[in-house]
Image 1 (tube, rainbow, N blue to C red):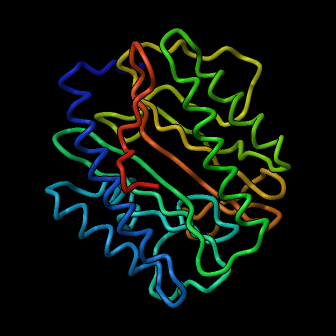
Image 2: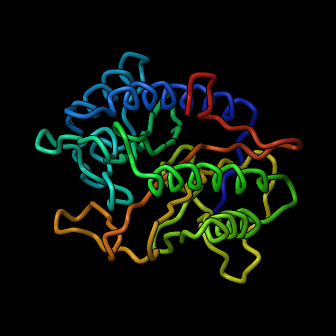
Amino acid sequence: MISIKSGREAEAMRKAGRIAALALIEGGKLARPGVSTKQIDDAIRRSIRRHGASPSFLGYRGFPASSNTSVNEEVIHGIPSRRRVLRSGDIVSIDVGAYFEGFHGDTAATFAVGEISEEARRLIETARECFYRGAAQAVSGARVSDISAAIQSFARENGFDVVRDWTGHGVGRQLHEDPEVPNFSEGKRGARLLPGMTLAIEPMVAAGGGETEVLRDGWTVVTTDGSLAAHYEHTVLVTKAEPELLTKIEESV
């Protein structure tokens, strides 16, 4: 069932979204050679708790960390580790959720570590622009499928593919709510968008094919062909006018 947020609930989600955004900024600043993904996760956890919130991901279905840190061919759900030390040329997707006053904010971005290849840079830029192309369709009266088609179209125009096994989703009192928001067009119209709907729109774009598999840790999703992947996400509020990005602040990525 799709949840329509009241004005009060939307305001609570703005607060949660801002906390998630600030934590993502803290994590992104540490995306440097020689830094472990555990150090990034520790900074994110401290940031979220400093603002009086809880990490949405910590303990969620048994997940052991406060953020997802996914490096290179890892698409999503990478588990932070002291042993995973970033090197120049890596790209790292950092996914953050914050739970505050009964609501979740969910956001992600992919960061360059030191000097990266031109392909990697184009991939990151494409994933980001895929989000904005999709979010522009999140207007009252449109359909979820309009978001999906815009994301897939831009990725393919730039020579990349989208991941099909994992999707965006509704978000609010629960971290994952209806509706699913695929990053590809299924030929179906999808749910109609109404003011008060809140969506985590999150393109996952691969440099090779979009097929994925889950590693033996039960969490980390990687591209099957080992190609690089990039991920970009904001929590989006559908309004009677322009979509509002609840996890976008002036300093954010």
